[in-house]
Image (cartoon, rainbow, N blue to C red; front, side, top):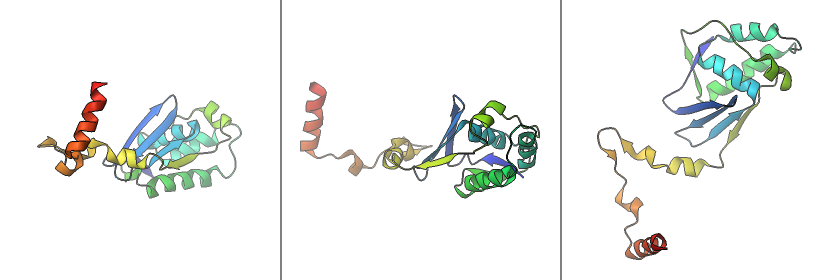
Length: 156
């Protein structure tokens, strides 16, 4: 099976070999260890799970149950709406053997909701393509006392 990133609602980046993904609809973000990030990257590039499994099976120390581990990892990504089934893509898996060995072939996937309110409060969610950012008047809090308090902070 081949997959692609659900770009309609997931923002993703891999920095220093670690994937960070944010669900723009829920404000939940996800992190992975370096080996899981490597597998995730292959998946989003359209490499099939069979090709990823074959590449992993060629590495020394791969556990006998790695196929189950990979299938569970992919199922979580699909369940969370991160990956969608796709038809085309590359067929050559490129896995980092050092990352696999360092993590003992564990595909660590963590979910965090500690910044959920902050991520959902981001005004980018209010941007309309044809109008730009036009917040609701109530969100601006036009209370005169509140405005005076904010202006006093600016004057400091």
